[in-house]
Length: 400
Image (cartoon, rainbow, N blue to C red; front, top):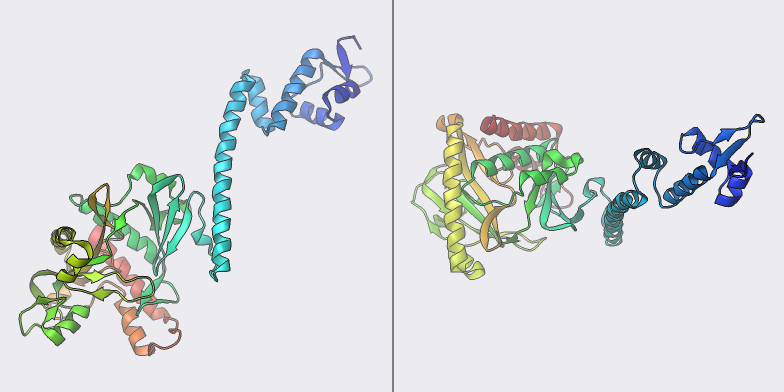
């Protein structure tokens, strides 16, 4: 051994490491001995000792062996290498911070009697709210964006029912996105599509990334035909939400022209309330009320024309609007089976009214099998299947 060489024991003592570590670094190609003596002992020169000190420094700062090997092979400086590693650490810190926030949110939910649901936990998003059908998530990094996830849950009579309708969330999302694309003349809340890569893969088929809106507390309902609650009210007063209608109309009749019949969105746990346009002006102001009415009627007319070309009647629907940067913007879902009443034009012309592409099988079955007290019964498989078929049929008819 020369004076410029060090035995493995000396290297261990000088570098503060172990002989096992040295052998491992040799086996993986990070630090080969300068020479191996005739007795099989390993010896390291001064350059090898400097290389070892660099390896130990980078390992101590958290770099993995493959990364260190690439640094040594490419001749990158420690400053450049550590700069890249620092950026990675910062990304990891951000990810861990989000996970910590998610766990804290889950703990609070459990303390308040909630349940842990895997589908409500996504990296990069915090669960904010769950409605009857949709779950909303915010992003700490992008406070102006909201992840809107449509579930397969189905509701009727203000109850979330069981079991869910397989594939319903994906169909609702597909139809909403399709309609937003058809109605380009109406400003909507969809975020630019290049940002949608942030949507977690597990919900990509049933989620939309949207702009945060300050929502109006109004459901903007437009009716082209007399059906549902509109028919019930007409029989009592020959009007719907204060809009006088001709006498002698029958259920399912086409109205002389579409009418705007708003509803007040009640706080969670309360029933929405059908209101007159005059009441709406008191809630949001005459300027906003007029703009919402005109925009709703315009959008309904455009959508009706598109649906008619596909052999579909748009009987009625509801829109929800909000404001961003001072612009009234179409939000929430739009023109889906959940928010609209669609009929087949051929069967309607033949006198078969009320056969709609929505959850009417659920409503009818629940009305027959539940008196409104206690927990509603589980839906029968035939009802689930029929409802799923109707949702799928509408998407196929409109978008294919």
